[in-house]
Length: 260
Image 1 (cartoon, rainbow, N blue to C red):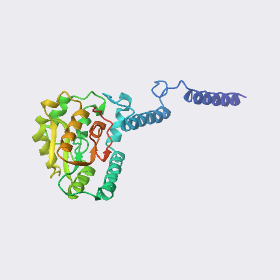
Image 2: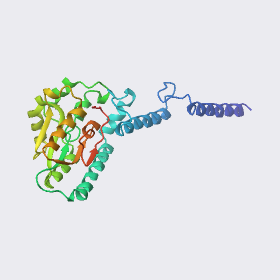
Image 3: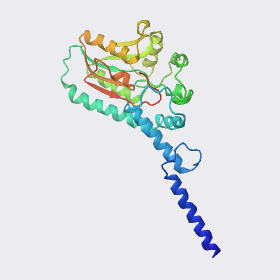
Image 4: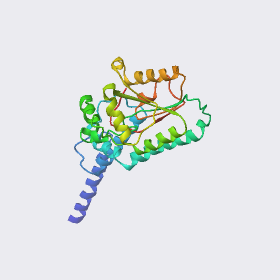
């Protein structure tokens, strides 16, 4: 009889636990549940947050949610991040072999690349600065940039040379400061980039513009000079949006920071 009562109590406790876990009041951030269930739910929450950053449902964030910093770090340093980036650039290859077969070869067919986290990676910096969990510190970041140690993103390096070899003029439009020109050029060349037509950086006259306005203004100058912009590759929506744009734009994943 005692064993039957004990068994009934165990079954009852399991049922109560499952009911609490599935309750509408249960929160993935609740400190009450320290088990695998909360870890799975937190992972789903952080993945949803990341995806909604990529599709621009979440905009203007200053920091990654603290509970998701570790997840974002794992993603941005994972083979999945590399695979997602490579998939985006596979679409560039398809576009080049299909739609870009009507180039006029008059020196006015152009392609635009962003620089940071498109051509070279700032992940080594963010590994030491909270991986998005801290507010972006421009002074600290620029000090790191001056060391010229940002590694190439190999998937972009390959497509960069493919585009150049096809005869398009490549323009680099970066939100970096003009004061970082020599550091940026040295870093790009040292990791294998060469042969671009022009590198545009933000001068004093651009300081009052947000990133989107600055990059739109720079593209407008290219159009005014007669260039046809076939494509843009960037990791920020502000690199891709605004007028004039390109015939196609390709966004690489980045959920560490947001530049508007």
